[in-house]
Length: 222
Image 1 (tube, rainbow, N blue to C red):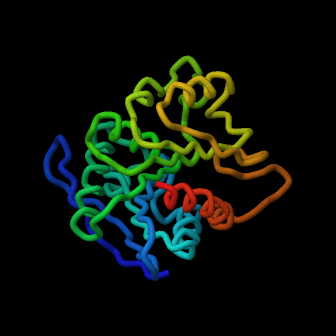
Image 2 (cartoon, rainbow, N blue to C red):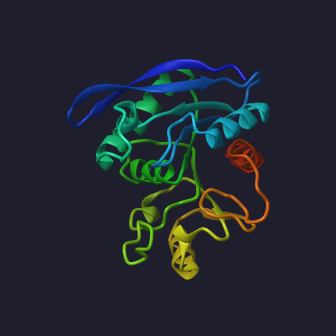
């Protein structure tokens, strides 16, 4: 996999900024994916590295990137408008460097922020794929993060572990998916929020790579 470091301009509410990205073009024409990290890890997490490499093998070009709080060396996510602005910067970079439709994909927090940016009309991906959508904060099912989902017109794919505590109770998650205009769920048997399966230990890069066929098929179908 060829990986090129890039810089993405981001118009934050506090002023102009930049974040780091990694561009991995596929060796043959195919879909393009922008891939965002989760709240607790950057774009170099083995899960995303393995996923990106496997996607390229599937003929998908991949742009990984970080949110401003990671660029600044912080561990906790910044304000939501900063993440939304970053998604806008990602779309602008792709429009200039690799024109054409793209799919916004994100692990947990990164996917949720893509959904917010799309619902607000800030970005216009061809589709959205969530790798472990964080339906609510840990242990807080009374604070669902779903009100914006019905505003999204493009297809949405929820890739979810059956044992993910972030989507419990299940009926709450099912109702959220049902509220979407065009959405479906791909279940990972026995998977938790990181798609680990009890009793079947695998390195994070292998777990990420295992999701590539699902994500690539979704992107190709758009």
